[in-house]
Amino acid sequence: MSSASHPGPGPDEHWVWRRLRQFWLIIPLVVILFALMLSDLGDFMGYSPFAINPCGTDAEQSSISARMYMPLAKWALRYTPTPSTAIIYIDPASDPADLITNTCASRAFLARLVTDLNALSAHVIVIDKYYSANGCAEQDKNAEFMKAMEGSKIPIVVGQQTEALSGGSETSGCLVLTPRLEFSKTSKVAYGVLNLDTDDLRIPLRFAIAASLSGNGGAAASSPPAQPNPPPGAALLPAASGDTLSLAAAKAVNPRIESNRTLSKLLAANPVRDPYTTFLNLPHITALTALCSAEPAPRAPIDGQPGDALCKPWVKPLDDLDGKGLSLDSKIVVIGDISEQDMKPFPTNLAPFPPGKRPGVFLQANYVQALLDHRFLMVIPTAVTVGLVVLYVLIVYCLYWAHDAEGRPRLSLEQAGLLSLGVLAGVVAISFLVLVTMSYFTPLWALWGAGVFMVFRYLEATGHHRSMHLLGHLAASQHHAAAHPAGGSTEAHHDGQSETKH
Image (tube, rainbow, N blue to C red; front, side, top):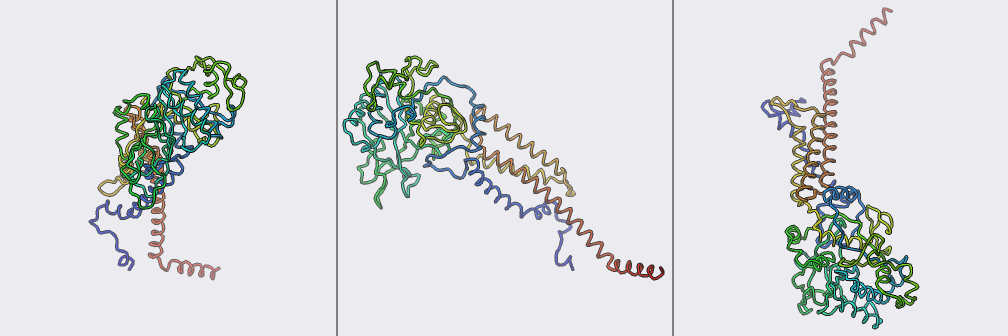
């Protein structure tokens, strides 16, 4: 009766099909686990391959993935170039407080700093700030700022802010430029989008920008910016490519930088693929050090305070501005605030910045330096990575499913587990080899995923083996009970007889 209700496998059925019938439920479970694992590890590690956002905006990066990535990338890019970039930071702890909070005071100070950097023969000035058309109502300070910027003999790159476009697409662009302060077309001022990649360990290269609205005269991206909030039903003109601040600065230094084969390949991808980089402890000084050292006495007042009195602690020799031989002659100078609002979590410490944090200007300066040095790592395409992970999963399953013609396993569970570990070690070794020889970085989620799957497969196989062993014991007990149905009463009868005799 039991056999009729639960027919067993036919005598001619191959052992492979018997195994598949046992494990077919596990296959969809593994697929679901794999998808959940990537989603979960995306939050845990700071990256998920299925969450690519072509219009990515600023995001924090303090995950375990970042901490693991840093030594790997440093090992792959193990040369340290002589920095051609220096950071000039505006610090509310030392500089006049109004330079951070008062837009007009900030513009007047920047006007003097830009003029002084021209006198110091800086190569390119990069300002990690955005200037709106109506940010300052004091016309005299606006005019002073415009005169210094437009009169600069060296190229200047300033920040361009964007806003998300509701209903935008990759073809029309999902960001629009916000209204900005326009400089003369004859000036050497260029713009760069301030957006960062969702992973700030990557160099942001370019974002798809909606060039303008159909009723805006067909302006290009370099013309006056588009309206940030288009009216309902307004049609968008074709998208324009918005170079980021770091790419625009690198192009100002080297106009032919896009002809680099690797960089051109990254820029040609859709969406643009942002490469990984490493970070250097670039030379940095305060804005007061640069300004006060460049201007001879008597110095004009700074933000209403006596210039010479304010500058006294900050004056340094022009060929040793940081005490380590820093000169701004022919340097790319990146200017930015280090206020608390501009700080981002970062997995290393460097004075004078707070522990575990970096200002945005530190990131931007490093991006510029990395682009000029071609010091970046390309990421293996997601499709290739997923394909290799699937192949690894199949290999691990084959190790556990390897049987001879009679269906006996060729490997014990321990042997299959050790070989799986060996395959994972081989994958890691190949990843390192590709990293060093071809500058292709294997996403850490793939290595994490392979390791988690290996442990899961071993535990699942061990659990199945124990459950089958237990079921075998239960089946044997049931078979014994069925073979001796009156065994219990016979024993009772004999016990009764001996009791009576006694």
